[in-house]
Image (cartoon, rainbow, N blue to C red):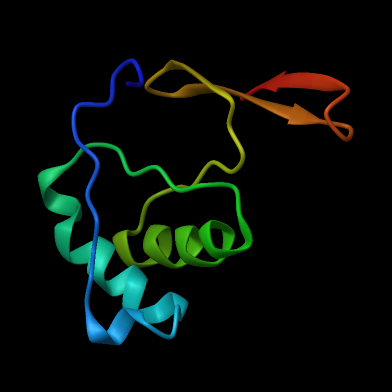
Length: 87
């Protein structure tokens, strides 16, 4: 279990089999109203989908965070992981 995580959702649908960012972003946006936070992995897929979701929701996206300090403060690695930046 992860602290602060109460539910993990799994999506299975024919339109998701090709792993295209657009259908996945549309799915996430369709469910977003029920949540106050959306988290995606720092993988090529996550980095492809997250900006699309943020744009469709007209919200800011913060990439590759390693810690949530407060609702508007995050920590993420910089300089190839040699330093931690608070944003």
